[in-house]
Image (tube, rainbow, N blue to C red):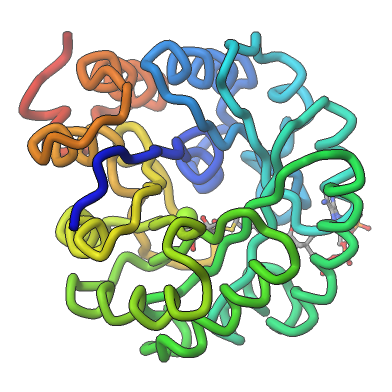
Length: 299
Ligand code: HMG
Ligand code: MG
């Protein structure tokens, strides 16, 4: 059965901008993007990433972004924190939620965070302990859940085992990343069936990139399985620097159009999201590539 409500987790300020080629996006633009997203009615925004600026230069101003936003009531602004150093940086800005990120593929783990899957899980333990001691919620990501740019196919049980480890460590939610955007609906359904035997469905989220144009179909497949948290980025921005050729997250406006058609409530204003898609892509020197933004046009 389809869920009656879906919680949308907006990724554009982090996943959307982390891989942006060309000049560093000005801090003021990042802050305005986050504030505009909140005005659309979005209640969960991944705002920044406390990673090495040598690895991901676009996120080098995480501290200034987190301190610069005017916080709207009821909105959670979270940040990626791969290690204790990242967590300390995020805590200093008054963050209320952070995220750690692992992978279901050994080779992707090495490329992305420079350690094995097992080492990453060991590294996250003190991050979770310290976060929990500070009353901060921690989300977990698993990358490459429907395929890896280096290893190809990934077995569902491998995804389930990493998701379970993150959940047991204390992550309140595990977001399942189709990092390369290679998945198709039946594969997504099979993967989720395996993972939801290890972690309850209500603690799972879908984080699908749209490289092959399958993300909306894949989301419909997992909604039918009962999943009710979706990660998306306005304008379909983004990609991972360590997954060459991968396109952005599924576009928030495409997801909202799907959900509205299904009668599923989100509390988010689609037209405002489309306006925001045009605004941010113009700031980046292009136009949105999502179908829904193109169809609706600039407001
Ligand atoms: P490392 O080199 O193994 O770690 O990197 P290290 O501890 O040896 O540190 C190396 C350098 O980084 C040192 O600086 C540290 O000080 C610095 P140096 O001495 O060379 O000048 N450093 C830091 N600086 C700032 N903040 C920190 C920090 N930690 C160390 N927190 C590390 C390990 C994890 C840091 C590195 O590999 C890294 O930053 N990786 C970033 C990977 C990344 O951000 N990827 C994109 C996000 S994940 C994603 O997009 C997937 C997702 O969307 C889901 C999906 O789609 O699948 C979530
Ligand atoms: Mg991603």
